[in-house]
Image (tube, rainbow, N blue to C red; front, top):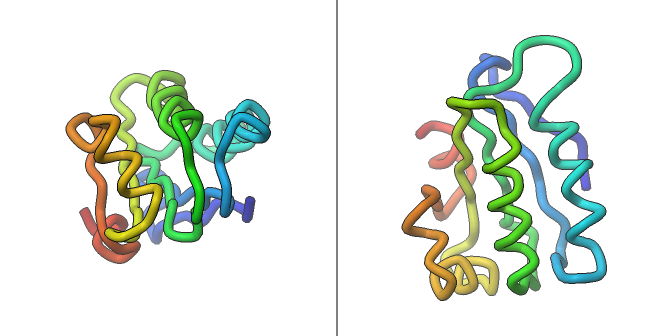
Length: 115
C-alpha cells in the first residue's frame, strides 16, 4: 500500500489506496495499515476517508469485511467513500454484497475526492 494522500484540506479528506488483491491472505494485515492512515496520530483526523480500489483487480468477501471494519473503527461522524472502476471485480463485489447501498461508491477518483 502506498502512503496516504491528503486533500488540500487535510482535516477534510484522506485518500487510502488499496492493493491489487484483497482476500483472506492479506485482509487482516491491511486493517491496521489502513487505520493508521485514516486516523493519524498527529493532527486532526479526516472527516471523509476515501478508499481507492481503482488498482484492485481481485477482491472477495474479505474486502467487504475490511471496508466495514474501517467504517466501524473510524471516529464518530467520519464517513467512508469508495472509488472503484465501474467494470472491475471490486465494483461487482460491492454491488453483489449490497455494500453500495450503505457506502457511496464513485466511478473515478476526482469525483470521489470532490464529493
